[in-house]
Length: 98
Image (cartoon, rainbow, N blue to C red; front, top):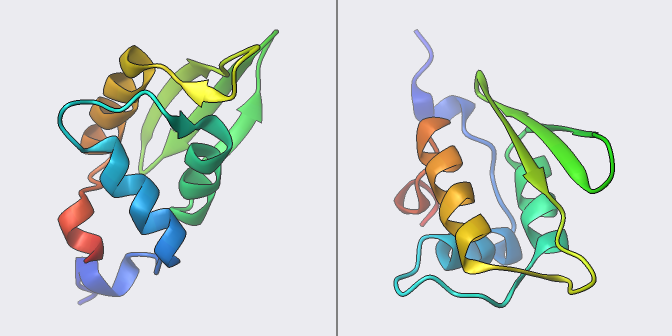
């Protein structure tokens, strides 16, 4: 039998910092979208381009569509909250990567 710990990807320190920032309260508004995309890739997510600034994400059987922020590079608080919900649904918790 394979335990969940054996299937979890290992994350670099920067990815762990980004993950913890997403789950921080109050919700930060200064997380770079590029850092979130890199975290998702490190977690094994499939990212594909949609129309315009849309990004389709598939992780652990959960799908979501997000809009890349523009013209700013930082993700707004609402998108960070949505990303947090998405990660929870996909079974990703920051305490699993400490």
